[in-house]
Structures are given as C-alpha cells and as structure tokens.
Image (cartoon, rainbow, N blue to C red; front, side):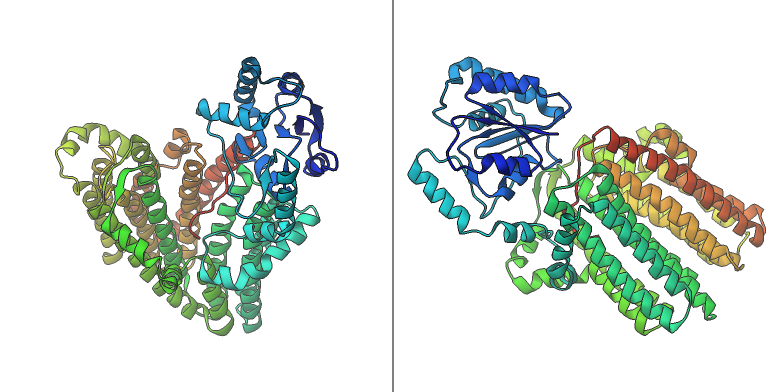
Length: 605
C-alpha cells in the first residue's frame, strides 16, 4: 500500500486525510521536516510515498493526477509531491537536504512539499507536473485564502472534469463525435465495478474476433452482424484508453496489449471477410493481403518519420508552418484528420460496407482510401523533410536501423560497403533501398512462377539492402528506408503466392505476412517504450527482411506451386511461434519488474 505523509499543523475540518485514504494511501502525520524525514525512512523502498501539506485544499482528482499516475517516477502539484520506488532515493536526498538547511520546525512557515519539489528541480530530477486545467490545488496561507480556495473548488465539478479528461485530447472525427460522447460513461461504469483497462481491451479483441467469425459465414446476416460487432469492438477499444485515463491505471503490458490487439483485430477481420467471400465463390485473398500490406506500410511510414524527428534539433519547415496556420481554421483540422483515414473512420467504413455490400467492394474501398491517405501523408512528410533544417541524432539513426530489421546477410554486406556508402550523396540511401525493392517486387509480379529472375533480383536486393544501411540513417529522407523494406518483402510474398495460382497459397501468404508484420510492430512498441529493439538473436533467427525475401524467392524456384504453398504455411507457423513467444515473454517480464508505464496519446492509428 502506498504511504502519504501529511506534514504541518492539521487544519480543523480538512478532508485531506480522508481523500488520501480514498485514493488508497496509508496516511501518517508529521509535524515538521525532521519527523517527515524519519517517517519517510520507515516506508519500505518498494512502495510509493507522497509528502502532502496538511493545509492542502483542492479537488480529489487533482490529488489523483498528482499522486497516483504510474507513468512518472516523480510528480508534484502545489502542496504535494510523490515518488515511485525507482525515484525514492532521489526524494530521500532532497528531503535530507531540506531538513539539514533548517526547514524542520514544529510549524512550517511555507509548504514542505513545495520546498522538496524545488530541491528536486534544482537537482534536475525531472518532476512531472500534470495539467490541472480548471482543477484546484493550493496551500492557503490564511483563513481568507482557504475560504477562497474552497469556493473555487465548489465552483468546478470534479467529476465532469475527470470524465472530460478521460477522452484523448487529439482524436479522429468519428471517435470524437460519435463514440467518445458515450464511451466515457461506459469507462466510468467499468471503473466503478473494478474492471481494468486490460480486461476491456481483451473484451474488444474477443468482440472483433466474433465479428470476423460472423463475416466468415458468407451470409448477409453474418455480414450485418459482423459490421455491428466491429463497431461494438471499436467502442470498447476507445473505452479501454478512457478507462485508463479516468482511473489512471496505465501499464507497460496494457499499452502493448492495446496496440497489438488493434492490429490483430483489424487483420483478423480482413481474413474473416476473405473467408466469407470464398464461401460465396469470390476469391478476394489477394485484396485482403494487399490491404494488410498497405495498412502496415502506412504505419511504418508513421513510425519511421516520428522516430527520425523525435529529438531532431533546429526542427523548422515551411510545410510545418503552413500546417500550423491551417490548424487555426477549424474545419481544415477535421478534414485533414479524416482524409488520413484513422482507425475510427476506417473501421466505420469497413463496418458499413460489410453490412451493405460485398467483401470485394469493401476491400476496393479500403484500398483506395488507404492509398490516398498514404500518398497524402507521405508526400507531406517528404516535403517537410526536404524543406526543414534539422540535425538528426544518433538515437534517431539507431531507431531507424532497428526498424529496418536487417538480418545477418545485410549486416555482413554493410560492413564491407561502409567506405563506398560514405561516398554516396545524401539521397542515395533511400533511392538504393527503393530500387532494390522495386526490382524484386517487379520480377515477382511480371515473371512466371518458378522462374529464376525473382531469385536473381532477391540476391541484388540483399546487396542494395546492405548498401542502404552501411552508414547511419541520418539523411533527410532516410526514414523512408524501413517502409521501402517492408513494402518489398510483403509485396514479394503477395505476388509469388498469386503467381503460384494454387488454392491456399494466398491464405498461407496472408499468415506469413501477418506473422512478420507482428514482429515489425513489436519492434516499434519496444522502441516507443524505451525498451530497445528485439534481441539480435531473434532478428537473426527469423532472417531479417532480406534473408526472408531471399529464402522465399529460392523456395519459389525449387518447389512446385503446391509445395510452395506448404512451405509458406510452415514458415508462417515457425515465424509466428518464435516472435510471439519472445514478445510475450518480454512484455510480461517488463510488466512484472515494474517497467515504466506508458500510454499512447498520439495520432490515431
């Protein structure tokens, strides 16, 4: 149980002690700094501890935001400061220094908690201060100030603010206007019944899988039920994040489950639509796989661009300035959020088209919409990259190298090509990656199955991939390298399976791309959580993008179409087992050891 130490002279009629207990704290009283330091030393090191001024006046949710958020080792609001176990020593040193300077008097003249916070700031400890908005958090110095603070508390509805803050500040049009107005109340209902965000996330996954099963029946009733259930799954998907924000129940495992299940739900639904179409005599597996490839590559563009510019210095661009100006015109904000087809708009479109049309029409609309969105966003980011003056850091280059997913072949080739790579102009790195990938994809698409040309192109792809990563990825457009690699690998699998022209080859290819895509998403989530990339043994075991591409083209040359289908299936199972087991092991272990909790408040995926 976390411990709160109330410091200073108690105020008659104050509810601070009961409010702290309602937040789960074990409350102890201390008259001054010396007694506070003594009590602080008695609190077990594995527990959260807070120092709170006994004169504190404010909203309960202000205390909740300041003292219970698991994402930050140190946090403070006026009159209160808290430390998680990872930052206990830092807090203890600040407390000891404050006590040694003579602050330990029987009645504190000012707030001890605020003096400790100031000492932490002086140490550069990185104290988080939550945005309170209209919420009140104050330490009144006299009865008049206390009365005014209490009036300010009474003037603001604490629960209304808490509900409003449960909704993500920046979200899509559909989510903002058609889901969040009521899903926030579902989140509150869940919180009051003790449900956790992870349980709601799991319910969303189960609902989406049932929706995929309904779509797989191939009947009109099944399609209608699938559309309704997909919307219900998305409502729950919004609810889990709102529940996390409402109750401040963030976790490393929860963030991973939320992100991973989103991809699993969408791609499982694609498979369900393809199975349903097959029952009606229409083979749309190529469209389903194409939609998954396009959507995954869109995400890689997002991830790579964001990582490349995460901590870039001198980050200026006329294109960015124009975007900021457009943000001042309200309707353009919503238009630009909608045309990128975020998850709310995308799932709403899929659900409606599933219920009213056919899987083929649904996939056509999805492919057209996602292609337009990808073109729009990528073009804008290319313009920003070309017009900005920025120096990218070693951290950004490392993140892009990890996202590239280079295997042992590319790594070995890169060592021998470093000298040659340094002589190339800045634009050469993404150009080489693009040309090498385009060559292998084109030969897979334009030559007959079993011919040698895709294998020859794959050998060239290994060399171009090595050259592309032979120097640090710090160029203006080097963030395009990972998405070029993703597109090359996935599309090669798609076209070879289509050219095999044997029943079951495309579903097997769908499974293989899904397994590899999971590995790539897992890499992103680890980088986002500051956990680093997957271990090298895992990347080498699954071959890296260039190794898998070479193996698949080799199998297409050596095997018959029927045997190739079996080989794709085996590869899909092996890759899925390896990456899933390692991923689950890693994230569960990170959760158990208390890794910093994270939560994605960025753009909707």
